[in-house]
Length: 359
Image (cartoon, rainbow, N blue to C red):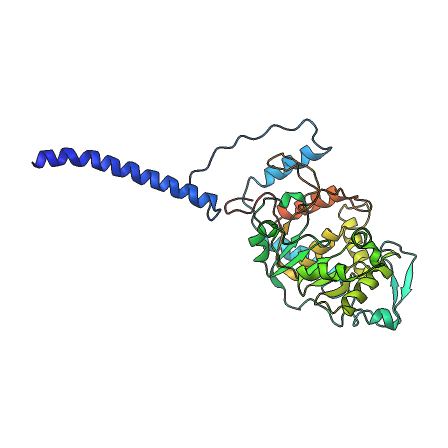
């Protein structure tokens, strides 16, 4: 009887081991499909071939990106402190980035950032639209996310990571909600608005303005940062936006870029190789973050139409494929500078998806 029992137990043990292995594999699959963890056996992935129509200059930059992202990023505290200190001393964004009633009183002479010969004297009416005090605290935020709008954010699963930041900056009135939450999040502390959006989408605010104000509800009580003193046409347009927000009693707070700060920042980057044009809104916001945040993370900053890792097509924006005109900005050159800061451990530039265990 004993020998017979032993013979029966061996097949049972083998069966149990097989069933256990199947259960473990099933668990791996279920967890991976839910993107909860990155455990489980990795699936081999063949590197796609280079497209024949690769954009000019893309290959060299993509190869640089791939090389950088083949190793784990680590913050270099000394590099960050040195760079942040240089920004603070030369550009003073912590105090001068945004126009306030404290730094720009009635009678001040504003010189436009993109039209150096154009000036404007601050009247009591204009002064009333300025916020009263510096919106940035003396103590730095721990983590800040600066979110661009590149199509590289599509299917990125970066939303949770973005919303976990202490302070979130978004650019140019991006679409939120509508199913994008998983990839871009919803939290917003500052959102910028390009005047061309007000012209194209809201008819220069010459008609009913309630649709414009109601479209801002998705940004909650954040600051709406407007370039009112970049070009002459921006001033009446941005003032109409500010008056509309005030008249309809929206919780969002209109504020203005300080053109003096933009000029300082332009000179700062010109001395570091960015010789063409003014810095883009995205680059300005990155610099504001570097002065006011201990840890800066960038998402949605990718100026090309091809993914650096997958080599598939990337839309201009994650919410549409409207092609923008770089005009006064040099986006590839700006991105290369951001990539340098990433390699130096000053900030972290997220490309690809945000699932655990990936870049």
